[in-house]
Length: 216
Image (tube, rainbow, N blue to C red; front, side, top):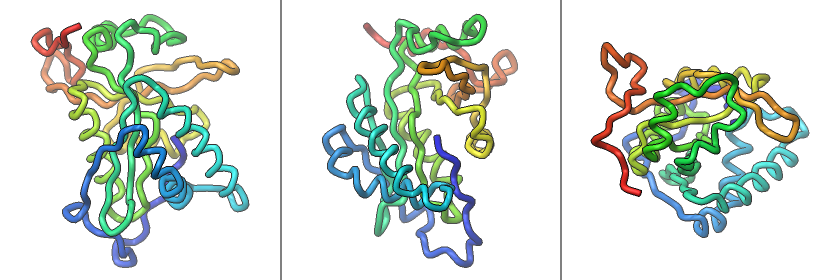
């Protein structure tokens, strides 16, 4: 996830409020057809170093080309008069392979939710930096998770991307550990967004509910 730009003063924003924003799901072919518009939104929405816009745009396009090929890929876009946000990801395999490289024992609740097919990985969240950016980002993420009957969203953030991690935590995500990914290996922060009910026994919302077990 790239470092998001800070929303400007609401009085200076011409972007619509959340009530006028429409959410629409895209399959992999629709996402590829919208790739140039998505890349434009990415550049407009990211805190990019001067002169790096072109390279960041190309890297985003390469990631998008790889991501749409993943099994279980899905994307949700937010539109008003123009494209104003998107979130994309894929369903985490039940076999636990996604968690390889996790630092230490994997928490039992994460293992159970993964085995039941209730974990969805968020790969990119992009929102235009208007005054409703925070609310729109959370709305996009939660809607995509709900559409997949997921109890938990998970995403990885580079340890050096402090602003991105802060933004996610501000949107309700929780850090649960570190994981190593190749090449490198690179150590990344693991953040989760629980959608489960928060109880005294499970204040983090990471309870496993056998009644929601998906069929094989």
